Length: 317
Image 1: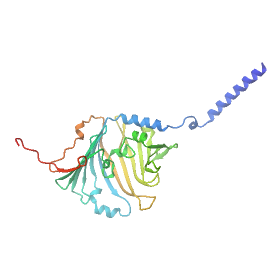
Image 2: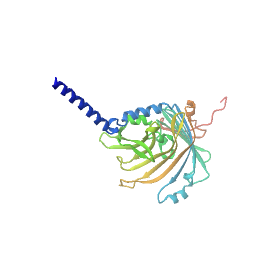
Image 3: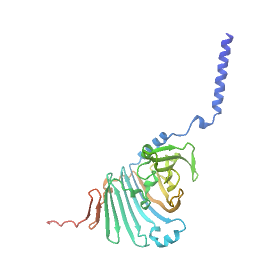
Image 4: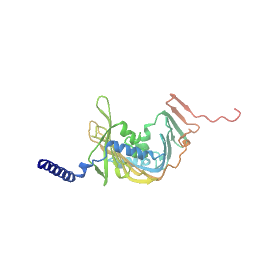
């Protein structure tokens, strides 16, 4: 009987000691941060709330480095603000851009890129009344280039796919320790494409804000495996439109890498500033149709032909 009581008493003391030990553990030991799967699910949910998106914005660039002053005087048009309209619905995208000729502060030019889900149509103005058109399969890479800076670069790592798909299809590693970007506590994720040989083809680092539906705060693109910067995108302002976080100001910086160097230097920056944002306003599929004007010289890579858009036939011909 005494032995049984002693055994029960010892067990109770052991339970009490374990309870005290558990209470004394740091909170991080009891509840770890979100997993990569948790973040992917949260990003997917946030993206699914956007049926369509329309952003009007301005974009202004400037060269960086010791040659910046001479480059600005040689190409003043590149430093003039361009006005742009970006539209997205599902897989469809369109970007209309009114900018200036590089060597002129007054001569404007138009450019449009429209991806209808399977093919890209592009139209570029040359001179006062000449146009060049292009037709190609898939989504043209220029849609994510610095020359055509647009909101896709503020919503993904590469600018090609939604972030949720990148997190699911690329190599991804979650950095366990939170970090801070411009005073914002963020979660950093490493993304990369690895060749069968083991070589990393592309590498990115994405910083997400957990407090704002894991919105992208900063993107870093590297030449080598997380060693040498090629491009950075910093989201400087976020706004909520119909409960959706949208980047309303972002800065994209490109870097140059000298030959045989593993370091890079800032070369050029562009700043995107939204002037009007519409979310889920109901965009028609016709908004992504792009008709080439009469006289446009078109290179159609899907048919491997070059042609010029003819005058419409008159009735009765």
